[in-house]
Length: 146
Image 1 (cartoon, rainbow, N blue to C red):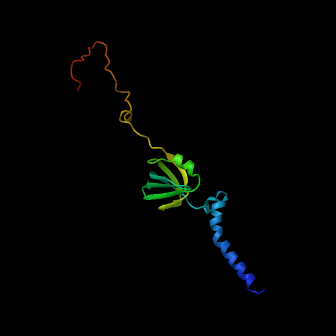
Image 2 (spheres, rainbow, N blue to C red):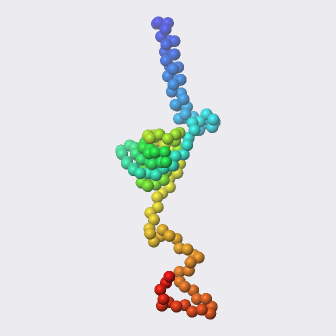
């Protein structure tokens, strides 16, 4: 056997482990690392504009104050599809704003409420609904209401 085969193999194996270990450590050991070693994650809130379900993934277009995001979910697709509707407000945990995000963590979903015109204004309890009669006065219903 040639004398350079074993050192070359060890060198390339170490090179591969050196490049892949930060990625693997952040994925599997993130919950065990102290806060100063973790990647800084920022909550990003936006409104769902479009949602499309495909066979094995869910595509969600979200508009934020920074711009639009296409979030692709590969995990928990049926659950997220039931949870998120169009025009909902969602909060994602992402390291920074990026236009394309793979499997972001959902922090919060605020459902969009349909407002009926009759239910839009709550009744004001300080304004009586019917005129009340004060002692010693008469109420005239014949005139127009100002």
